[in-house]
Image (cartoon, rainbow, N blue to C red; front, side, top):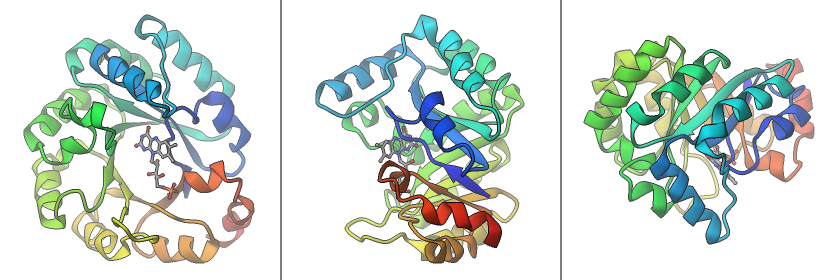
Amino acid sequence: MIILAPMAGYTDGTFCKKYEDLFDVVTLGGYNIDKKTYLAAEKIEKRGRKEFLIKLDEFNEYIEKQINILEKAKVSINVRFVDIDECYSKLEYISGLVDYIELNCHCRQREITELGIGQELLKNRELLYTFLNKMDKLDKPILLKIRLNYITLNELINNLNYCRELFYGLHVDCYYPKKPYPDIKSLKVLYEEFKDKFIIGNNSITSIKIAKEMLKHSNAISVARAVLKNNINWIKDIHKLI
Ligand SMILES: Cc1cc2nc3c(=O)[nH]c(=O)nc-3n(C[C@H](O)[C@H](O)[C@H](O)COP(=O)(O)O)c2cc1C
């Protein structure tokens, strides 16, 4: 299975529709679905990084429109929030429309990490548990979008084990600081540790060769920047091979 990974400011319904034939699942977002993350995204955009700034009272209508644009692929949605009670009705609305909900434990933009979320969630297992425990009632498969090498692999595994029964899968950005290739060694350990979970390998997959290597240690793979760079011909061929 091959998935279009989320890219804030890019992966809305129209963008995903363009690549729908290439992917089994497309990921919308990341969307900011409460006041604090919306304000943080405004600041991020002011310093020049693209974000989705969807007015909170128009979000449900907006998201339904995006999903209606899509016809073939399954849909996942990547979300950020601080106050789950404030945005719970949005999560309920979304869960009626999509196939997966992806909780962003990945973002490293300062305005988001200052709120104690994004990649900070990887450190704060109590908050992660609280979010996931409430999201469990949505009755949708929950994916955690995580980043490797922010905390040690041991700490990551311990914190994920703490809420193990509350998530369906891990979307793993195998980010390797200062290296131009993914940390496949750590992905292998996670895949062994979470055999019962759906593991998506991500980071720097730009060819069938790398895709095959990643798939030795994951159930699916995902791609982001290669799509922005229009390096997609290899994806067209991959379905014949995997
Ligand atoms: C412009 C851009 C925006 C991104 N926005 C998000 C996001 O909102 N949420 C998220 O979980 N990951 C986000 N990512 C990370 C990607 O989903 C992916 O994990 C990362 O780019 C590594 O995969 P790649 O090597 O295939 O690009 C973003 C990446 C890019 C390049």
